[in-house]
Image 1 (cartoon, rainbow, N blue to C red):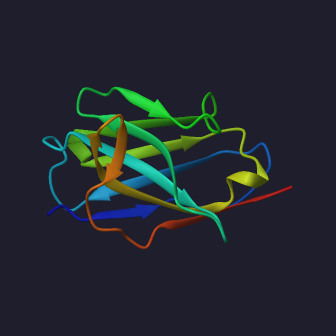
Image 2 (cartoon, rainbow, N blue to C red):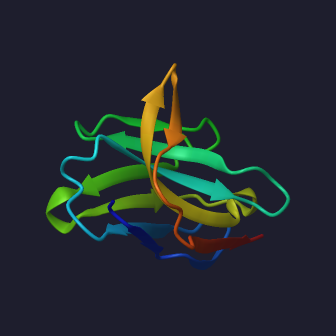
Length: 121
């Protein structure tokens, strides 16, 4: 099974930008869909964005228009470009293989350690 490793987090002021990377240990070409999740302290993990093999994307309402997910099959990497960051975006961000079932995406792989994003006001 492909292992995914997240990087690119950090501390940024509100209104700033970060680009997260999700690097795979093997080819992602055949992986149907990959998603970015986030989990803030005391809150449940939230699916932020997904991208399919055909590069069809979906976003949570809370990030729509600010975040962009993309994939580079040649580099076996999925990115999450985050613009206009807000303090409420502060969380640990993780990526995972996802599967689509009954109208929703569900995680379908192992979780990595994630990458911390902290947005100061």
